[in-house]
Length: 281
Ligand code: PAF
Image (cartoon, rainbow, N blue to C red; front, top):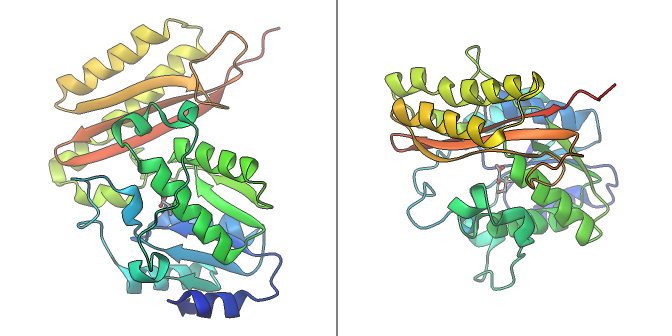
């Protein structure tokens, strides 16, 4: 496996490749990322993973500085997962001048949920992903469903800019107790770690209620918020949406997703569960 740090090295290594499968990451990799690399291997070759903590997608007061940088351990994991090339540029390599041209994703996709609580976040994500796509020129790129709103923003980026890239979604990997794997789980102390499964349990309860016929979505999400608050969480949102476009579900919605974001102490956790409504007989 090659570990490359410059744009020139990356372009040279990928010259002439037409079947590249790409997994963009911010490093501090866990089994969830490994599963994305394994998924990428099924879709193309060479497999390229990027490791870049993108300053553009962090707001003031967010965790850009404390986001864990663990390049050596990440490379060891990627090598065992079957990655061929790691691209780990410095900030000055990817942003040699201040990035004054940026991608502004459609408000309809980013004005609420995480977009409402992290202004500018999806512009930062879309901008860096477009840059990385231009550098790697993959045939396929793999993104985790854990960041569900991000996945939809990237699908739309590819569609509206006519990028010849297939976006493949990887399922969220969970710890044995159901907690979605995330680099930010490492911020949790012992008692927060035990508490952390509550978000997923509340989302699962909403899914179960909807699947058994409940249609008062407002009451379901409000109840989940109340349970989280009673347990000491600070809730950003719990919402049930159409999984295709993240709009409020309509009577014709077939695929739904229940999404939540909430703070446990100083750590913001997000999670979601997507599911199909049973077709009516
Ligand atoms: O999901 C992430 O880790 C990041 O948002 C991404 C897609 C690598 C862009 O920085």
